[in-house]
Image (cartoon, rainbow, N blue to C red; front, top):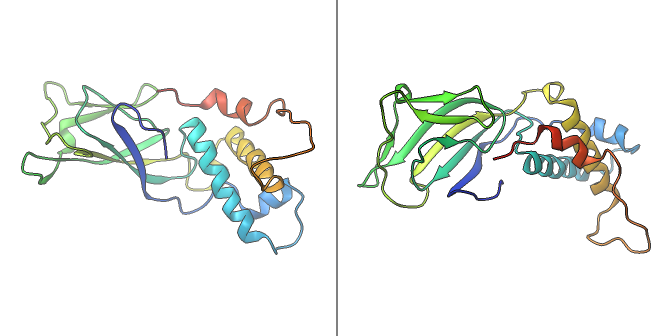
Length: 196
C-alpha cells in the first residue's frame, strides 16, 4: 500500500474489522437518500480510507501489517503510524529456514516519530540470507478499534474524499472550472502526516 523505500514494503495481514466512517455517516455527509447505492458507498469509503492512509502513512483502524526488508538496517524505521505493538520479527537464515527473533533481543523506541526498532543494548541483528523479503516485521497498528477513536481531522478528510469520489465517478470532468477546496483534504491531512 505504501510506496517502496529503502528496500521496504508493507502489506496488510489482518484488515480492520470496521471502516473509520459508516455508510450512514457518509450518506448524511453527502446528503444521499435511500439504500440502493449502499454497496457502492461502502466501496468508496474503503477507497477513500486507503487514499488517506497512503497520504498520511496513518492506519485509521486497528489492523496487523507486515513490513518486509532484504536485510536488517542499523535501526528499523517503521513507515506507519500509530504502532501499537510488535507481534514478531522473523528472518530467513542462510538455509532459508525461518527464525523468529526473541522479543528480549530488540526494543521498540516509542519516544519518537516515526517509531523505530533497534537491537537491545549490547546486541546486534542476526544475519539473514541476502534475498528479497528475508526479514519480516509484523506490527499491530492503527488509531482505534471503533470509528470514534480515529482523529477527527482524518475522519473529516475521509468524508471529503468520499464525497469527491461519489460525485465524480469518471477520471475526467469536462465543462467545469476546477479548483481545490480551501481547507480541503490536504489541509486536514498535512499536520498529522508521518514523514519518513
